[in-house]
Image 1: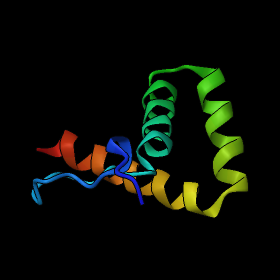
Image 2: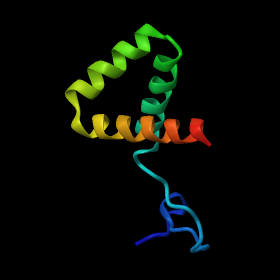
Image 3: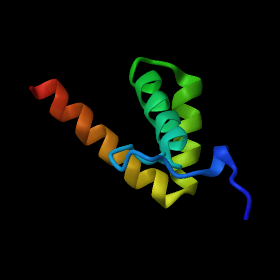
Image 4: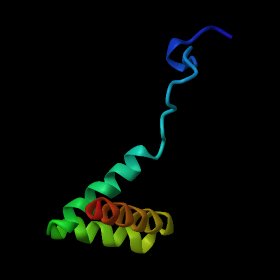
Length: 73
């Protein structure tokens, strides 16, 4: 099998693996922040998403909890 640099594993075993859900979670956090600050379009998009996706609903509640904890700090 030929060496393919773009698919090779990093030599440094302390490298952080890429999170395939990062963009997904980032978008959910973005919608949460926008909705919390009065963006009705973002609130509508978030509501539709969390109403139709149990995983997104659980993540949304985790995000809310984290935000609440940060505000209390």
